[in-house]
Image 1 (tube, rainbow, N blue to C red):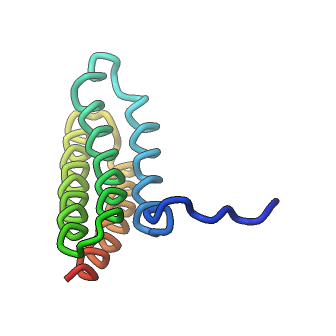
Image 2 (spheres, one colour):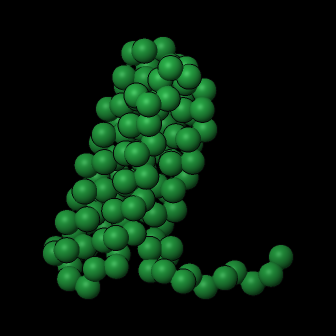
Length: 123
C-alpha cells in the first residue's frame, strides 16, 4: 500500500464524518432489501436523511464562523434523529429485525456523541 493521501477537504479529517458516511452506506445496503413498493417511501426518506447528516457535517466544516458551523452540525444531528425515528418505523413494518436495529442504534449513538462534541466545540 502507498502512503495515505492527504485530505483535500476539511470534513474528510473529521472522525464524525467518517462514522456518518459508514452509517449512510449501511442505510443504502439495508434499504436495498426493502420491498420494491417502498422504494419511494421510507426507503427514499431514510437515504435522504442519512445523506443529509454527512452533507451538513461537510457544509458546516466549510464555514469560517463558529456559529455557522454549529448551525450545520445541529442540522446534521436533527437529520440523524430523523434516521433513528425512521429505523423504528422500519422495525414496526417488519422491514428490519430487532437485532439489525440494535446494531444501527449503536452506530447512530456513536455519530450522535461525536456530533455533540463537535457542536460543543463551536460554542
